Amino acid sequence: MYRIAMEKLMKWKESKRRKPLIIEGARQVGKTWLMKEFGRQAYADTVYINFDANSRMAELFASDLDTDRLITGLELYAGRKIDPDNFLLIFDEVQEVPRALASLKYFYENAPQYHIVCAGSLLGIAMHQGTSFPVGKVDFLKLYPLSFKEFLMAVGKERFAKLLDGQDFQMITGFKQTYIDALKHYYFIGGMPEAVQSFAENKDFNEVREIQKRILAAYEQDFSKHAPIEIVPKIRMVWNSILSQLAKENKKFIYGLVREGARAKEYETAIMWLSDCGLIHKISRINAAGIPLRTYEDLRAFKLFMVDVGLLGCMAGLRQRTLLDGSEFFTEFKGALTEQYVCQQLKTIEDLEIYYYTNDRGSCEIDFVVGTGERVVPVEVKAEINLKAKSLKTYREKFSPEISVRTSMADYKKEEGLVNLPLYAIDRIAEISIS
Image (cartoon, rainbow, N blue to C red; front, side, top):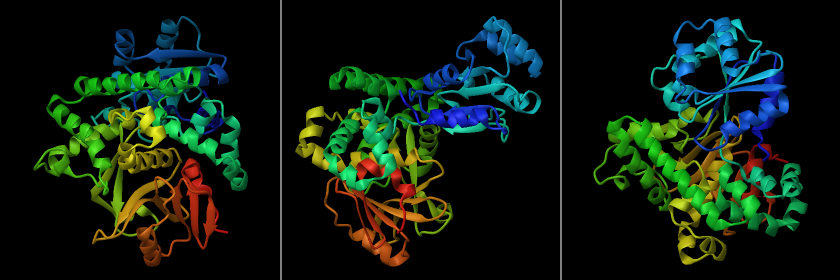
């Protein structure tokens, strides 16, 4: 299975300023597979250590963090000599032994010749719990579910994925039905690797849905197993409210939909926990547009999206037939699914700031506003081909952006700073030229 992150790992390996690497991401997005596959492709050998319920490793790291002593212990555990130039050390579920996380500082300072990659499903939580974290001594890589481009490659449509890379929109438009059909499949299947692989092999939508149900059940178990007991009910309530939050026309998070009379301070920790786990994306409002966007952030207003569009559809009980035939239920829910999809694709673009905009009166709302570092781009999301966008017109009159994007099922078109970018090509947004 092709993952764009593999290219980033290869660059990390060759970097002269390489530090121990931490891969962040929600459970079951493919972190363990990626690390092992990277070791298989790029190194002579790999030493894989899972720290979950590993008392021997807990004891090794409980003493002093002298790197020579640690390497000796790891060699004894692995049963072979570790060659720093040709071996990859993999620390999985590293948050289970906080001292192993702390050791990365000393590997960077005293033994930089060793190639170390780490991951953990709840690493974000560990960082917020006072764990001795090696700030400035590690590199980071965020891993998300498969993007639509990665999905195309996984299901045997590599040429169509490469065509998107080339941005030959005349050719792309000629094959638009292939992209639209694949996009509908992606809405149902999403990007969780196990679900994608199952579909690629068996083309069985029912099997995909069973896998998604298992993943959602595992997430629910994590709430009880890993979250502080006093906030578990609130985590469940926030999690279960996301569907109704996104089904609204105005998708701003409303605490009253979690529980009648609920207030922000009661649920802030629960939202932070879900965000730190990588299970939700919190997209904040901005009240003006300029670089950098974060200077205009309104922390009181935000939208919450899930980690994966397929899991959102599973939670909604969306059937394959409903999706492909476009029944009345799907017509109502289509906007939520489309915005979730766009958010998910934008998240995979490196160094992209992502917000949404409303004016103070609430009469103008832009679904997403992204900062590329060079410019601010408003993004209006349309589920079908209806291109009426009164809010985008109002925004453009007020802020005069160099370029604006309307993304929908309509064909690519560019006119006077406004680009109609097909939904299946939204990941090209940072590369759109003004001319």
